[in-house]
Length: 450
Image (tube, rainbow, N blue to C red; front, side):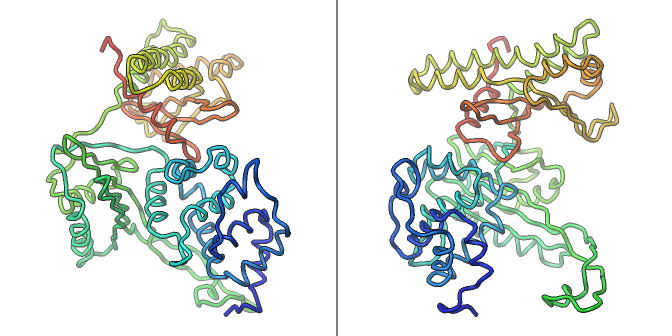
């Protein structure tokens, strides 16, 4: 066990590789001496008096448990593969009023971003980040890529009763079951919302491991042997339930294909909705459907040129953008600056490629073509691919065709998203919530001639 006199040298070395500013911030937080974030970062920041090695040793000597928690969280879950980092940044800016420039500067350095999270949420009395972090992590972890499916129901639910129903559902599902199942629940009574993370074991898989690891030993023997370790993987899906004026809205974090039966029973037990897939009304993103349909119809036309396919992919987006901007101009809820910001963002959208998934007609499991910038410029350099791209889009089923677009929320920044038949999804490490709102508004819009 580590004492005040003997800080763990390995953890000291890990911390000593970090920015001394970050370590100073953590030390102040853990000591109950937290200062305004602008005192540490930004133009008015004060440089720490000591180097990273000093602060690393100080942290492990005086606040070893808290420093260990910081490192554990960073290693276990505070990474792009687990959390939507832009959503974390949004939370810090909106809920804690952190300076946008400071948060944007550190976004991408996940050690530093986690320091901001600790600055905002750490409670010295309890010695942890607490419920706020758990709720934020759950939402950003489950819904980090906007690859959701939304369903509506004409009756609302009681948030308090959901907790009891979830507990009973878990017990019922694990009684005499071959595969384990559990649900993590994060409720927000004020927002009339509950986020549920459903986890279930899948079939048994085996992998090769050294036997000394299987025996719980840290060091290998002189002649280690290999054995097969059998384990069950875990599949996960998120369900966000929210009461609305007209009833309830249910958002799934991913497609339901691998969860059809499980979720059918889940909705029946937790929300008292029988035959969920027959009862719930699925949301269709009408603008997205219009975009894909236009491209598909143009590709199907034997007389159409490759350039006309490209025009179809951009013209409908331009038409939708123009209509949304007109609606914003007529609205009294958005000022002139907000309208102009929306207009500039929509004008930055460019088509950069397409992908095909699970298409029986073409025998394609997965195929994608994606340019660095505009797809039209890339295709123009390779005539054979230009003709082949049109032919391939002509043969593929519409529901299996995804169009890839790029948007520039700010100069020097780019995000990418795919538009499918009836839905859309952000790609990469996560899209800023304001950009998501703009794209949602765009692709939810129906053109006046529909």
